[in-house]
Image 1 (cartoon, rainbow, N blue to C red):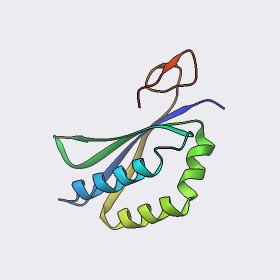
Image 2: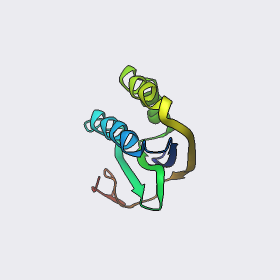
Image 3: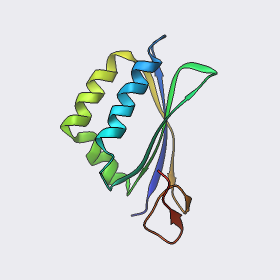
Image 4: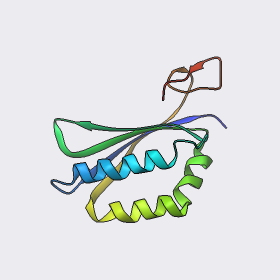
Length: 111
């Protein structure tokens, strides 16, 4: 199995973007020492006031699925659900190399 990069988009209720950002930053904090997740970046666009983007790099798809089943992750999901109007996985990519991840000669540590 190869590393995967996920690009996700969360559409939230009007005025709730900062709440969603804080929930996702708590998710990032909760996995800072988890080696299966090598990158978890929360992003916003000044042009999309009710949208939050997340870029994640995982050891593989299974590691991401396992993370989603954890009790702490489920608690954050339940907290976010009332403000989410839509979720889109923009793409799942097979990571080949570059700056941003580690543990291969093709990767350098960034996240």
